[in-house]
Length: 417
Image (cartoon, rainbow, N blue to C red; front, top):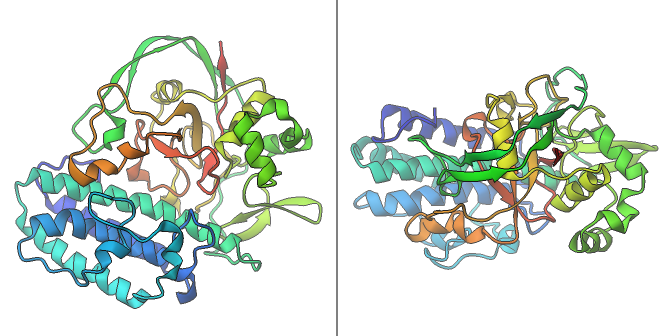
């Protein structure tokens, strides 16, 4: 539904608005009131902050410029819930979001209701305003990004709790079959990647442009937990020849010996999930690895990570289908035949996050959404079990720093032909 054209804020867009906003609150229903405030590490945010920030986005970029006479519920929220938009004004430091015991959770939900009420007025009266409609759709995709961040951050917060609490009941699992890894041959030559069309896409997915590829091979599915255990048991974390210098420094300083959320209990590997701590599923895709770990694993397998051009070119033959957050599982599942390209885990690529040739950021403060982060990060592709299905496209470019591990990130291998 979100991919519909938005030349007018049609009833479909209004329905999308209600659906996305309701889904965010639905994701928070399993939380106890105490859970809303927790920020276990600086890179995550308290669930309460997410609820307020996505609301701030609509207030800041839509209600204030487009709804005459709009009055904020509390003018102080402009600073409290601004994430990184310097063009809007100052922000509370990210690492200090846990200090916001006030406004209370109840007051944050009141803030959401206030903004939703006025957004309905805007949706009712903004007919023909293409720019407003496009901003609304951007705001909805922004909120969907934070829906995934909510699940990521809740999982990280619960892992910091020695009780390893469960966010929800046991997930509905797919069949535990292990698809044999096959190397798919892909011919090189001149091709094109990037978004081209009339539906929604972020500015960093554009413009479509030519690329040249050498012949290459790419794995038919992501790396599994069992395959990554082999790397651990082969002392992969102790072999400096496998690691880039920065990666070696990180794993030694942080004492990494396995992916995030893996714990040895009674001589068996267990994994923290959103339904608590459970034995590792060998056939499932390995998840919560950093780019450094993905790169080292690939080198150990005499392979490499695919470039994003290789990944997009190979994945273009497949429908965008897989295990997304819509399943309610929120956990990577063993690969099913033909469903290994999208969902389950974001897949690290070997490509740094940089602008495409001809890239143009959005005007004004919204230009800070993507463009200013195009340094020192790597691209991931394909979506995950925490990503809404209608938020993902073939051309979607996610990005994280190479040391980040709390995203639902996994590994797909490639190699030269």
